[in-house]
Length: 120
Image (cartoon, rainbow, N blue to C red; front, top):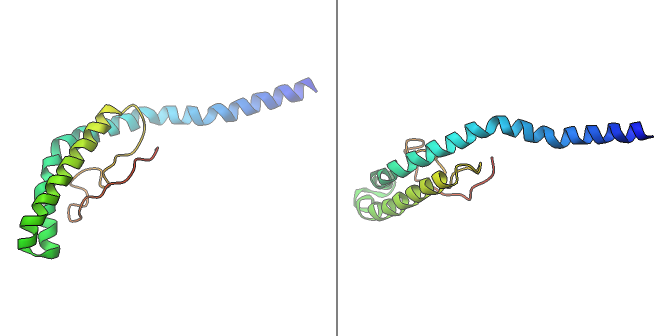
């Protein structure tokens, strides 16, 4: 009876620690990617202004893109920059970014959206 309990205990401990071992191999990569995307978003946040103006002009006309696109672009620039600051600050915690397209050049023809960060 003792050997069965010991065997079950060893097997249960293996199942408990196995996911942690797998995550430990991916952790440096995920943390490095989050740090890199955070720095990139901090530096390229200002590019949201012309991007949003272009996207809004294509969808709703030039006058609307130059006026409303400018203001929405400023909001997106602040959002992307602050998201980058958050990612750099918390890069040791493996979560995804607030910004939907991780880098500004991904999906350049679509307006930027924001989501709540999820664990990787």
